[in-house]
Length: 194
Image 1 (tube, rainbow, N blue to C red):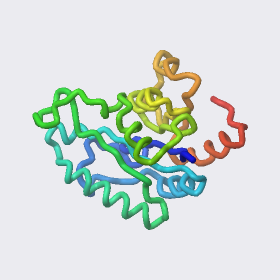
Image 2: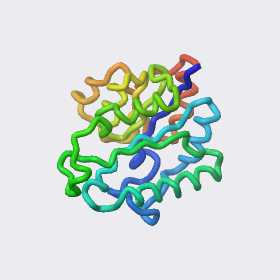
Image 3: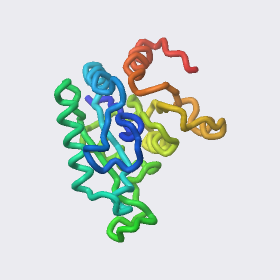
Image 4: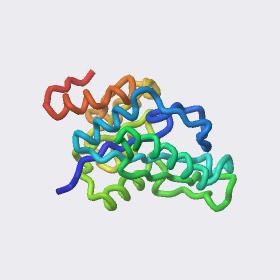
């Protein structure tokens, strides 16, 4: 039987987005994130980070730097029983300063490549899964992969025209820590969209 997943953008959802987080020193969890991830795992969801990392393509940090940040993040989450099920990243950008990463690829959100790779690797049930992001590109990637629920956290998607492109699958939460109670309400069938 296929498993449901919560797909997560990283910067601005899991950690504070200071812009181009390429070192452990710049990584800081947002409040209650380990607790929320542990709760989602306990509810039976795979937790999968799908993150654009154009800082690699811009030459601001390396893939090894990104992986070191993710290893640190995983070790910290594991202390709470909240380690991620998987992590996918896109190092590309069509206007990259580093030629090796100058690519208009199928993995950079809003393209669905990372989500589809996760689906194949982990045998995920995308129509019953959730994509959580803080930008329109995150949600468009989820929609392109036919993820059943799209959740905006934060305030980056205020324009009515942007919201209308993703209705009725779009839901809005103040922060990621609100997600577990929203998921419980969704599964009980008593979630009322705002």
